[in-house]
Length: 169
Image (cartoon, rainbow, N blue to C red; front, side, top):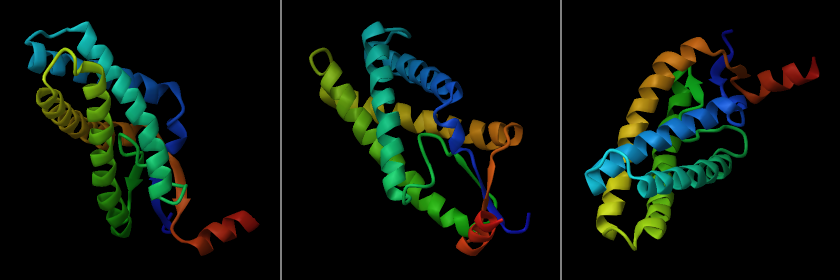
């Protein structure tokens, strides 16, 4: 246990759990965006736009994360890795804001494309920014405080030597 520096939850990325979370967050963000943009809690056009941009953002984050992390670790949309030792914290602190920024850019672009004929572009972009910040704060708290304590992830070795030893056995 001493050699384990993180617990990886990326095997859950392609399961129904992550897609259920994606839909819940999309509807949540869509309802807030509807309230901000249209002053209605439920506007079908806005909610569908937010859902579509979340789905596109979800898969774009997946590939960006793989590129950013050498094809191995996923820091996607929600933090799929539980940090156990402080030297992993640096990767987390660097990757997380980059992926949040990419998410906001992708979703802003998608929302602008879908909604630009109906609403002001500046309002769409500002709303996309704030709904993403709100949902990420909620997800960070929920995932780190609840999910990581309920679901057991795949333990990972700390260094290449530990990993090589496991492969040899």
